[in-house]
Length: 358
Ligand code: ADP
Ligand code: MG
Image 1 (cartoon, rainbow, N blue to C red):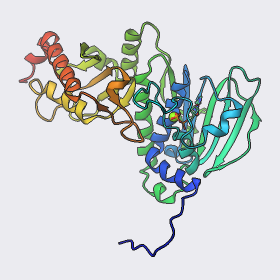
Image 2: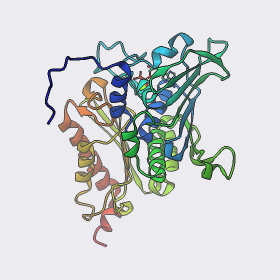
Image 3: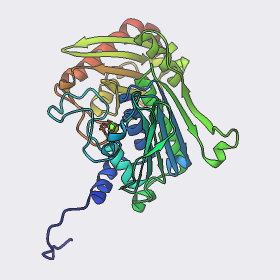
């Protein structure tokens, strides 16, 4: 055990603070991609282009056409606890993906980061480097409106974390899963994910396209359906029930797969709370409970479900990665999911329930 040798208390320098925070916010390349793409969505981007190489270890690049960052704020964007999205007064009234001001400084602390941005008002773009937490000076750059964040050699500044990464293949897979989830959350936004690894680039200098979804047209419900078909497949949307229900300020919508379209593993379950992809035990438990009577054990429903409510009714500030949420009324959320799905299955799923015994 650690035994204090009566050493004086010292304040960790900012670089150490950032590397510690980075450990919580960016666990692996997929989490860095998530943070950067969420920044793009918060900036009102209509197109987000993501490129990675070697599972994201050597390169992660996220480019968007959002509102950009003014030159005067570039350095601040890389400073910890600096955000344009909240004044901190009410951390239960969060309507953006970000609000902690931790992603850019965290990624900058553990990689070689280059932030390039241009606002509509500016007549030039500016770029700023941050290498393992050390900031450079802003310099002029060439870029149309928007922002590009490039992070090379992720975790080179924290070799221990580097050792925890899985194979390039597994990390690439995790990045692709993350991009799909974000694409399901924002159907009106176009996404491209490219693999620029030496091997993957052979086919073309543009790299290999791992995922592409153009902005979906039409009103939101229609656009979402098109996006779900693109990401989860037409077979899913053709074999799913429309869900639409409301209870005590919580609104649920989305698609729930017919029992006949079930899977051997819980791989096709996507949950969103106020537009944010989440992994939530309460909600996945409710999903399982709703299908209990119509699915054999070992079978798992496919579903893409979206819960919407006043931000005050749900706390997203549970974990630095913001993938966990806490409902003020967990019972209401669970009850809404279970009853809406059961109702839909009973109404629209005669076909489904008659094949349960097969
Ligand atoms: P947060 O998203 O929690 O505010 P970040 O560290 O992710 O913290 O980003 C810090 C700030 O930098 C944001 O509040 C935003 O003002 C700006 N920013 C980051 N990425 C972008 C982007 N792609 N487009 C426009 N502004 C951005
Ligand atoms: Mg952010």
